[in-house]
Length: 135
Image (cartoon, rainbow, N blue to C red; front, side, top):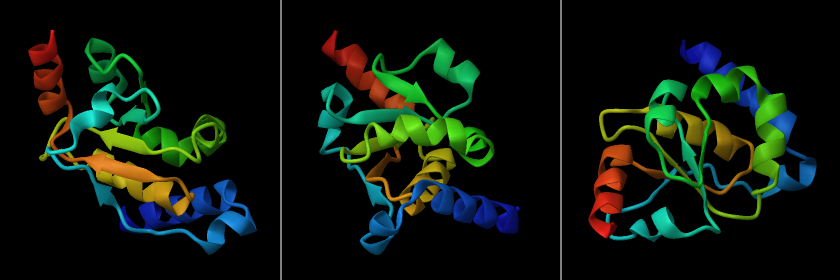
């Protein structure tokens, strides 16, 4: 599994990066803290829900997109054009919560593709509570 994941990351990286983009990539996964949840309501930030499509369809941030690890690994030709529209902007990936690692895994793949990616580790459960409080 680790070798497959590493290979997929390398393929995604090579498929999505030009030589110019490869030179200045910071491969650190950046974490969004609970003190900075402004991303939830900021339309200039792409929100990526990395949960399974059925969970995404049941509830999600209205302006988020669904992108699973399976999408990133198996369909980079579909993922890259969507991400390239946002390549100069911040992207925040979330999944269910702290017990879910899909957001970190997707983030690692996208970072190797040269995208500005952040992860909100507390996930959808905390985001949903915040949205419910605002309504």
